Image (cartoon, rainbow, N blue to C red; front, side, top):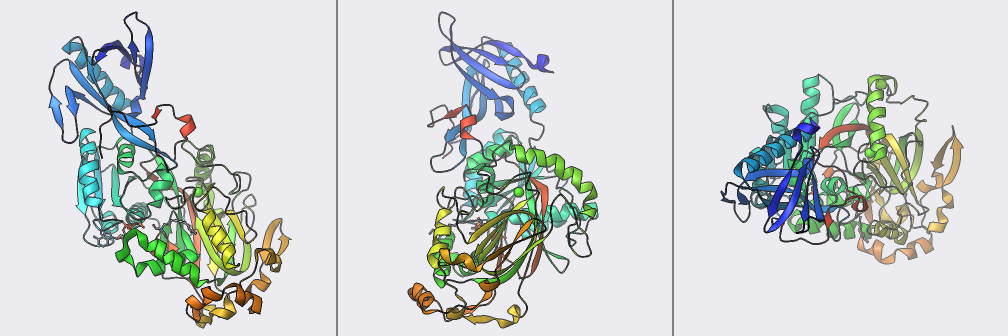
Length: 584
Ligand SMILES: Nc1ncnc2c1ncn2[C@@H]1O[C@H](COP(=O)(O)OP(=O)(O)OP(=O)(O)O)[C@@H](O)[C@H]1O
Ligand SMILES: CCCCCCCCCCCCC/C=C/[C@@H](O)[C@H](CO)NC(C)=O
Ligand SMILES: [Ca+2]
């Protein structure tokens, strides 16, 4: 195969001569000077060639073809560092080659196209695209038609486009309509649109496999269709955490070349009914309250989260709860190991084998009767009880432009685990420090009132009587304690696991010094605060408070490859040059 595809000849780009070589996996062209000495080489993996066209072709501002019979144009992925973002920007590189004869030109185009087919088996040919015209800054339609559609056309992808007219239209379409002939599904929107695709595809796959989604014990069937995300929302967390930048061109190019990134999904249940799926943030307390507040201010667009975050922070709330969690095997990885899940991550690769091996006998790990795991290697359920600022579970780092390293910077996209972050009640300034650290490289877990655990399942319940209580007096429930005062949380060891008993965390503390610590804050909020918060599930408010969650390893696949390690990528240019198709 390799030898069949090999081709080597002299080619010209402008008035410079190049030695071009196609080896099957790579297409290289090296400038050769008048004395036949090699100068700079450009090397493009065949998998990153977007398209090969006869003639001298440009695609923007509109497609133009100068149909010369000795020329051909190659479009490919070019990388650029992206300033503030963690990942790399991808742009469409373009080189117009001239051959000494038409026969050689035809040989090059034929060989390149064959190599493309051979080395990019997951490239989509036909896509189903849903555009949310109201997501984010309401630019979904424009982004798709001006930026994405021309690239899909160049790559020979045909798309069936649906501009949604109501919420959940995309989900319902995927659940009910004929999906035959589509290689993948794309959303143009934010995390909410992605969530619609997630629910539609997972639901459809389980229906067709005859599996019941309601049962947390069931090992769900991975979805056969890939999901592509063209970011056009407010947070775009799933895109940022799987690509590293919020950029429609970069995302479109990942879709075109058929990149494939598996993703863990958390199923959320109550009383053996499926409530929702989550990939980024399942958050109770602060993040739930922020979402509930922000829904009242949707008209503000993406700014609603900043406004609501400030208001909720000032309201200084904490909530009582009981958290049960099943720790993952600590030998596989740790949320405090300061590693990052990057493209080609070895932890995720090792997990692929473990996850799919275990799925065959997972019935013994997760008993459907009492939702208890019983495996020795994974440890036992741990229970903690107390007052929390927030309880968060994330299947991945959940990095986003506001928090470039994310809620849990060392979490993995596809290792079959989630990170459970418990932020115990603390002094308002302590909590502010915790929040602020999300915006920098400082470790947000290195605080005495914060715990993080790598887990496979979580259950949350309310202390008895809490649900009926409704509202509590703010002054009485806001236990504004200094970080140093965290002595009230006793640590005991049971079955080799650390179990934290926040016995006094549920105490009502109303000393004068505590009241003095939050004078303006308590004055700003109402005197009655709710006794229970809500769950923020990837931007949706859940109707339930007491929930049962299970992580399903690698349940869906995205057209992405994880965040690329800048240091390991060679063909990264610092700035755009004029050989790049300018899309913006
Ligand atoms: N035509 C429509 N009219 C009203 N709502 C819609 C429509 N299409 C989709 N939706 C809903 O809009 C919600 C928000 O959309 P989307 O996620 O695209 O943007 P966002 O909320 O601004 O961004 P993010 O989710 O990243 O914060 C989604 O949950 C989706 O169900
Ligand atoms: C004093 C500075 C405070 C800054 C606080 C920064 C904390 C940012 C953490 C953001 C995490 C976002 C995780 C993603 C959640 C999405 O699922 C969801 C839907 O888009 N977005 C939100 C905001 O709930
Ligand atoms: Ca994970």
